[in-house]
Image (cartoon, rainbow, N blue to C red):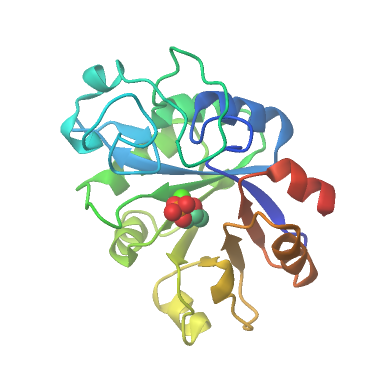
Length: 234
Ligand code: G3P
Ligand code: CA
């Protein structure tokens, strides 16, 4: 099996994570992308890793407390803990629709992570599914979450969805777990890889050693901050 290489939050070694600039670059040069979805106060899905604006924008507070109109005045900045990259003064937080506009009519495979591990965002499943249908992107998407109840709700809403459970820990009897929860794959921390013959994708893989391990074991996919390095190695 060829290991699919997912640009984790775009390509954060080159452009600010979860930014339109990074996604546009990936749309031209990559094969698969991973990004994280939250809901604003007025139920607009937006792309950011954290629940709060503090780390990656010029503002503070929870996304869920902002209406989209107010969030549009917020700008992305460099994460102080990561490598520094130029970011346009006016680059805002992307909405899910804006990201779909970028990948619409490309063959890039999308991993949409519903960030419901700390906050529940009631209704997020229905909102994301509706937009997937609007943009006709269902055939090139895997929906993932650390929250099994989110995945169960997605399955109840649409039995045909491609679903993956995110886990930092090894899952005992992974095949049974996948069958019970209608999952197509597991997205695992690289230390939680299973011996079982199941579809698994691992994160976050940035060293050559870890990348080579994923290729040698023919894992289904890897998530990396530098998809260009991984493509070269593969
Ligand atoms: O989907 C893989 C990875 O993105 C999960 O961890 O914290 O980067 O969202 P995190
Ligand atoms: Ca993620």
